Amino acid sequence: MCHQMRSLSVDCTTISGWLFMISVGFNAAARDVLSYAFTEGEQVAAAVSDLCPLLALAIVLNGIQPVLSGVAVGCGWQAFVAYVNVGCYYGVGLPLGSVLGFYFQFGAKGIWLGMLGGTTMQTMILLWVTFRTDWNKEVEEAVKRLSKWEDKKEPILN
Image (cartoon, rainbow, N blue to C red; front, side):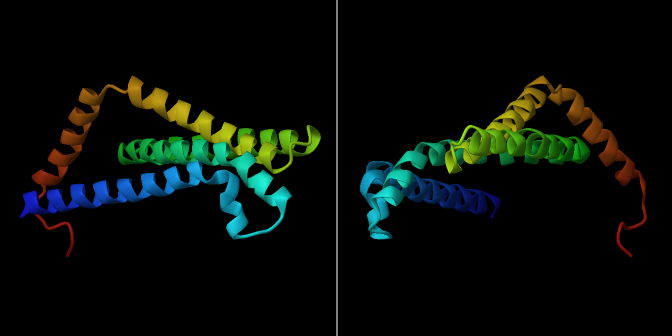
């Protein structure tokens, strides 16, 4: 039964990946004309084409960062992840986006670049922590925590 569930999970993930790659590939191939399906304005079409590379970078970063956050939260480092999130978004992303978007007059592109800067910083911090962690030690700590529960004979839920 477990093998069937694992196989189903892998199949669903593979199909999801294919669908995602097809849609992103279509977007990349048609970005100069795709916006004309929704507007007749050439300025809007040019803005969409100009912002598509940022969308691609956001998709990559937002595929990596939640996994790293999940690893850290799964290790019990919720407070650390919260501080990193708040610090990177509100301490780096918003100020950088405001400066790029309004002071340097990059507009939406500058705001998005600032937020991507915050997300990049968050991803780099979480990558650094993930690679610097002694996972053997983490496994030993998890085994110790589990053994505390095994020693108790009373049920967890009454």
